[in-house]
Image 1 (tube, helix red, strand yellow):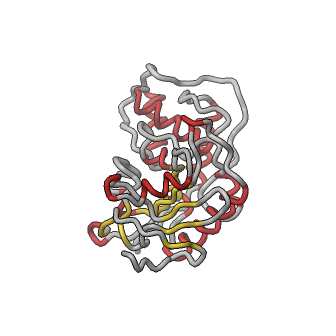
Image 2 (cartoon, rainbow, N blue to C red):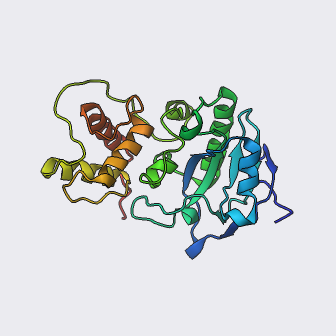
Length: 256
């Protein structure tokens, strides 16, 4: 691994020992975006490249836009942890992990600099083109692990990525009023909400109970697609934005 050859031509190699073979012959068909959640970029890079940590990612993007590659894209980095998307649980074997330097929610959660986002856009464009990754499979860590993770969070500019051809996004509905659902509610409307979230890809049980998992999934959805309020309450704006996203998904390809 000392001779790591970069896949992204603008990356600097910094090999991590924490990787393995993608299981079952899988190839990456999704990008998972994280923030580092550590005080400095150097401490994050050291952690991702230390064998004792047992974590890694394929890339790290510095605040000034510099990109470091730690694991070859054809290998399985250890970034997703326990996670789920569209029924798949081995997200590490299906994804390319991109860590974005940011201290995170527990340490002030600063804005993402423009230079950094430009670099993330170019990196994602390059990866998506080479691996034919669909826009709707450019995801947040919080999307695939909503009860454990909040990154890259509601400040991450998903709209900017979408405007540059990266990811799936619709204009969030900004209307108010009407009925809303929250933790403790139950019944058929909750089951319908869970079914829509599951159809999009979230790992939520369709049981008709607005439980802790449903609250976490709604919060993750809001962080990504309706970031003006991330309270886990399914208000009209949240539900209508979800409707718009589902309508904007590409039609499934039917077998002849």
